[in-house]
Structures are given as structure tokens and as C-alpha cells.
Length: 267
Ligand SMILES: [Zn+2]
Image (cartoon, rainbow, N blue to C red):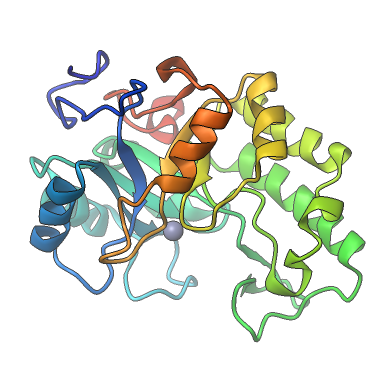
């Protein structure tokens, strides 16, 4: 059954789970592979992929960072007609400065996460790296981290926030205690206010059900993502199990609608 909102530019005939959820992994990174190998894997898994390359200023350090219209158009042109959704993973709140609205309009969606965070010197710090310098006080860290979520959700025109509720390894065991009702409520309220979709990360197995239940009750829409590099993409088990536990319908799920990312529509 084709996705009802599918434009000719989007993959048609999305595969569905027995429950009727479109089987789409919107968080697939191209690193260490080729588009041919990735699209073959998509066929094998029966899951349509949304491909994301990092986008933002050259201050962000990744194997490839799209910073200009020409670089962005190289990416979206290569993906056109490949049966994938065309996305970027935006970096920091200033990610869009190098792009025209027209070039952004060649994307289907923009995704980001909160895992790059202002370090003690104000510079960009990757919270998952062991060199990251964390606040010694986890409660204070979490308050700043929640504020950072709000800044990103408010300042950066996004479609999807990924890796939601992830916390750095030194504090990860305290997930349930650190994600208090009040902190969850602040973040979820910002999703609702800005109409941003919440990724259920199959790769990180996050957010946990308590968080997702609150988000569903508040009216947040969800999408599935692996954050996978080849061949770890398209494995959606955790996300599908959450969808079952939450009794989601297709109407609770968000997919790109074929009219470009929010950032290009708003400008
Ligand atoms: Zn990612």
C-alpha cells in the first residue's frame, strides 16, 4: 500500500509491518559503505531507509560535513531516485547558515540530536567521547542538558530529534532517576510546541517506555531510527516492540511528507 502522502520524489510503496506501521529507518549513516550496498541491504531487510549525512559548519568534525549548497546538492542528487528518503543530521544550532532555502528544499527532512554539547570552554564537545569533560554533579549536568534540548528544539528548524533521552556513559546507570517527571515534561512540551517528531532509537534502545508513554500522551509523533552504519541499519526490533507496547497506530508515526523539511518551508 503506498504511503498516502507520498510525492513522486519519495519512496513509494512503503513496506508495512503486520500492525500497519511503515517499516522505515530514518537514521541511516552512509559511512564506510556505498549507496549500492546500502540500498541492497534495504531490500534484504524489507525496510526503507532515510539517509542522513552530517550538515553544518566546518567547525564540526566528521568524515564528511555538508556546509554549502554545492555540497548539499551533491548529496541529494546522489540519493535521488534511489528509493530512500533524503535527510541530513544537523550539527549544532547554527547548522543552516551555509544553505539557501532552495537547496534545503531538495531534502525530505532534517534530523539532529543533543549529543554534541557546549563544553567547559563553550566549544563543541561530543558527549560520547571519553575525552568529554562532564559536570561532576549529574543533577546539574541534567539541568543544563535539558536546557540544551530546549535550545535545539526551539532554535534549529528540525523535523526529527534522534537519540532522545540518551545520557553520557558515566551517568547512564542513573537514567530512571535523572529523567525526572519534570525534566521529561519540559522536553516533551517542546516537541509538541514545535511539532517535532521523536525518534525511537532501535540502536540505543531509547527512550525507555516511561518516557515514550508520556510523549504519546502529550501527542508527540514518533519515527523509527537505528543510527546505523553499514551493516547495522534497518534493525528496528526495539522500536517495533515499543510501538507494540504503546499500541501505536500509523497515525502516531511521522514520515516526511514530500514538501521538504520544515527549515525550508518556514524560511
Ligand atoms: Zn546519527
